[in-house]
Image (cartoon, rainbow, N blue to C red):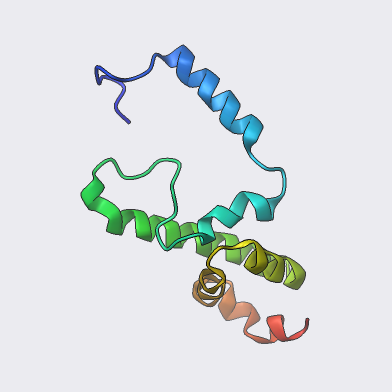
Length: 115
């Protein structure tokens, strides 16, 4: 984001941080995704550089939550939807993402009623 800044880390140090990040990333899709449902503004890996742009980060967070919900809807994976809601710090965000996901038009509420 700021490669020319005086405080920027050298590329070789960034590579090491990226390797550590990858090693600490959970294997499970649900565990990888749960952080998105901790707050309306998720702690994005690459946040908007300007702190005044919180609205943009909120929009990016919502898009990523909808994509996650959409992936579960496409798989028709009811159990994972409920498991994600249990993992989430803000389970209401799971419900909101499900309703707002494009895939929701195809599956409707009947999908969740099959549990």
